[in-house]
Length: 130
Length: 204
Image (cartoon, rainbow over all chains, first blue to last red; front, side, top):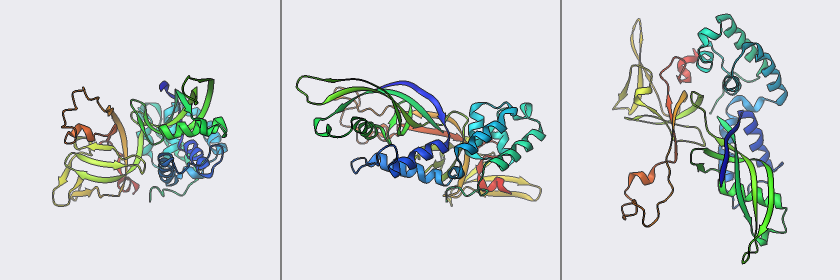
């Protein structure tokens, strides 16, 4: 086996979630068979983990609209991805995700960002990993 | 935390599966081989994303199977450095706090990367953050099962390929060798920044 490119693209939690639920339901790829314990285990566990994040409420349209709304902030890809995956609800979380946020974002912009997240990304405040 | 990894592999399809769709057989073979396994320096493989290219299939003398070089993309769990993740506390020990993510549990937050100042409570076997306020010190315990937000600061891959009979590690001491039990992929986390640590610390 040969690894051609270790990381072609980063995937959002939502993309992985929809792939794995598709596999579990037998859409696209076949359901894991009895002989494929490993695949069945990992899909089950990852879906369990992701179901407790808010990402199951997302849809491609929501994500597109959210990414458009983020454009003026000049964030990097990784930062946008983390905003999408983690759905921060407090300024301190934004400062964690955005590097050198003090220099790159004003305080008003941080609150604007939180508003955008609230508006675009649906979800009960935080019901993770119960 | 998930990435797509482009790989290439030769897949052997045995004759007794020739009645099935070739693509399905290839997907089956790749998922059987890779799902829930750690590939050295790549990460924890989750599931096949898609097949990008199939090269010509070959049949070799003495084997009825056909061998096909497959180019494919696989979903891999590999958080990038400085990524923020949320997990649950699995256990606390002198070395630090162990965290798990339902499907991945080799995450450790070493003692020196906890909130400052933290101390280890020998009686409870838990770490506590000694948080200073005007009315004295508060012990914020890091209970097992609590949700914790942490930053990924390092990753360690250990090559767990077994050594051959003439290798160094084969002197019959393999069973007691601590190296033998090492996990192939470990993440090192940190919570020494504001906003990191138990979610309940920052909610109010």
